[in-house]
Structures are given as structure tokens and as C-alpha cells.
Length: 185
Image (cartoon, rainbow, N blue to C red; front, side, top):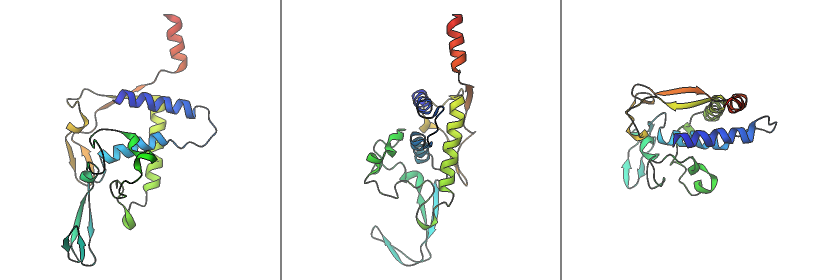
């Protein structure tokens, strides 16, 4: 799965943006980031204080109550996400997002209290990925976990993998090295 993603991503970058003067939007990259944030939201729980008596799903919630929102659970809810544990960036294509509840995906929270750095963070992540993956391959290090859903996670302020992510970076062959290796064989 990771191999096909990297191949698709690298081909997308080369096809669209090598020596290009047009603006770079990186839609596929953005969908990959959103799908990663859906499965592994940086802040898995967030709290909100109720300012006036409210009713939620027939429960009376008095003013002053602090509600905890389980974003980790909401992002994996099959009512909003078919096959919720599958990594599928195309969930975020416009045609597949229509009709989805606006609160089904809140990696940066939502409403009046959402993260003010949302646009900056997305641009930063897209730029970082495009820059790194244009030159390097990201490969799994020896890892006992064959499925991303087996990863041991913990949350303090943010969601993390116990022991950190185990990856290796390898330089991508350039066209010159590919041509050189073909002529010497």
C-alpha cells in the first residue's frame, strides 16, 4: 500500500510540477494529508464548555458542563466513513465529500474555536511532503507492526506512536543515474 502511494505521489509531482510555471495546488497531496489526519488526528480529544442549558440527542446538558469531543472516534465512525480503517485519500474528493456531516472531520477542531493556523499548517505540510518526496523515498524500517492499526498509540497533548515512527529515507534515483545504470549493463 505504501509503495503504490509513493509511486502515485511521485508520478503526480513529476507529471504536474517538474519545470512548471503554473501555480502548485497539490490536491492529491492535500487528500493524503487529510486522510492521515482523519486516521491519526493530532489532538484526539478536545473539550468545550457549555454556556447555556442545552439538549444533545435527548440528553439535557446544563450550563457549565465540559464536554469532551472524541475526534479519534468520530474520524473512524462508519456512519460517516465507509470502511473507516482503510487508508483512502480519495474520500476527500469533492464528489465523495458531498453530504458528509461537517463535523465528521475536525483535525483542527471546528467552529469559532478552530485552529487559527489551519491554512498555514496545511500549506506547510504540503510543501514539506512535496519537497521531501520529490527527492527521497520513505521506507518502513524493521517494524513488528504490519498494519498501521496495530501501532501502539498514546496521547498526551497530541496523538503519538509509542517509540516514534520507524522510517528510513532513501535518495530517489535521478534520470542521470537511471540512464547511467542502463548503459553500463
